[in-house]
Amino acid sequence: MTPSSAPQLTTVAPHPAEQSAAVLCWRDGAVAHLRFNRPQALNAIDTRMANEFHAACQAIADDAHVRVVWVSAEGRAFMAGGDLSAMRSDPLPAARALIAGMHGGLRLLAGLQAPVVASVQGAVAGGGFGLMLGCDLVIAAEGTRFGIAYPLIGASCDCSTSWGLPRLVGLRKALELALLSENIDAAEALRLGLVNRVVPTADLALETGRLVRRLADGPTLAYGHLKRLMRTSFQNGLDTHLDAEADGFLACAQTDDFAEGVGAFLDKRAAVFTGH
Image (cartoon, rainbow, N blue to C red; front, side, top):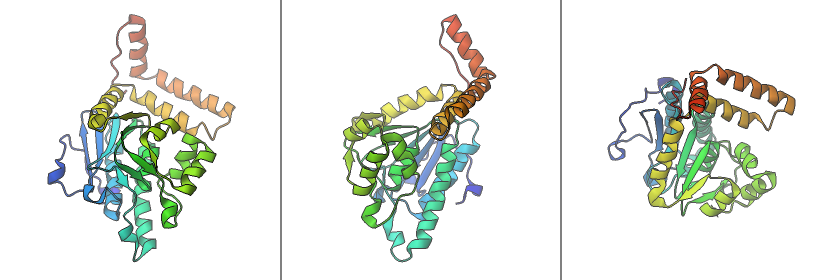
């Protein structure tokens, strides 16, 4: 499957037991679900999964009804990195294919107006770690273990790991995590700001669902401007960024959601945003 043949998002959730796809993708109202579905391999990335991930991200980006994206995974692990068995005999072509699919999908997710929320459990390593860093918000189950792992196979990183990690934890700590490749637990991930919340494993879907529904009811265009401003703030000088903030606010001021938000505030009622 290629991005050019990306399917339209269905509004019916596929049953994982009846699906052979490595990545499941559907929309429930304004919530787009993107779920990794190789539980028997701890959702390790192979070429098929990378291509399906790219295609799913394209389908989400093409669907104007999406106001939030929920990234999750079947089974006991979110993602155990790349599938090394595919790289053993002919590493260069295999690595190129994996990177092309994953990076293509990550670029699409990063460009969305809609917030992207990940719920993670079990193992989050390698490409899964980078993918998690690329999401806007992350909820982790207690007991989750996080690790970069690339140096353990004699490799540097991919999947935006070296872009996201220093921005979240600072350069010195990022280098420690990368060079030593020691696993950290969910409590440490929360302390470092790698995740936003840690919840009991049994409550992971429930708590993520609550957060996702809250975001789905929010002002999607304003969220998009906020995401862009936050992500570009490290590369802009103050004068440039003040101009960008002004442009973003003025763009929001022309939206239906802004009129609704101001009216609701002045009328002392709850705002009902439509994402327009």
